[in-house]
Structure formats: C-alpha cells, structure tokens
Length: 135
Image (cartoon, rainbow, N blue to C red; front, side):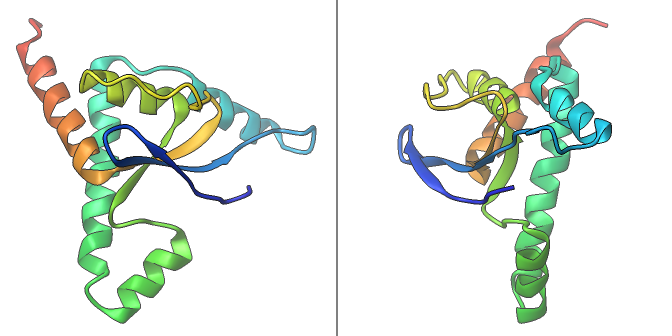
C-alpha cells in the first residue's frame, strides 16, 4: 500500500489521507473481504465499539511515545499518537456524528487518519446517542 499524506482542511488539519487500496487482481480473497468490510457502514453501536478501540489504541500510542523505544515501536507498526486510522466510509460516519460533512475527495476505499480530538468528540456523541436509545 502506498503511504502518502495529503493535508485536507475542514476547520483546520482534521484529516490526513494515507492511501488508497486497490486489488489490482493480485490480492487474495481474504484481502478482498477485508476491503469489502471497510466499505460497509456500521450501525451506531458498532461504530461506537470501533471508535472505542481506535481511540484507545491512539491513547496507548501516546503513552508509548513518551520514551524512545515507544516512539520507535509506534513508527514500526504505523500507529500514530495524534490520529485515528479510518476507512472512507467510517470517516464519513464519524464526521456526520459531529455534524460535519466529509470533503468530496474522501473516497470509500481510501484510508484516512482523523485527528484524535475529533475522533474522541465523535465517540462521546455516539455514546450519548447509544445510551439514549431504548432497548
């Protein structure tokens, strides 16, 4: 996967584009299913769980980044302490929770990084919505 960063602005440097995944006829069926899973939108409770995991991973990366070995590990595994990785579909869903519209450049199969503070705001908004739902 090609890794590049494209600064996109919605009220500041909110989103970074990491790359686009294409199958190009060389990927296994498992990879195709993984790409297909990233294109399917979550319901609110699933998105809440997904964001919980991603936000928690970013907080753990922040803890690790306090020392050299942790920063090296974060770089090695590609974990950012300030951004949360999301597919285009899930990025659109997270931004819609905040009342923001994703830029037209956001594509479904694209891989993006949402700034941690916005991901946390989306998580908190979703937590309120899920709690308010009758069961």
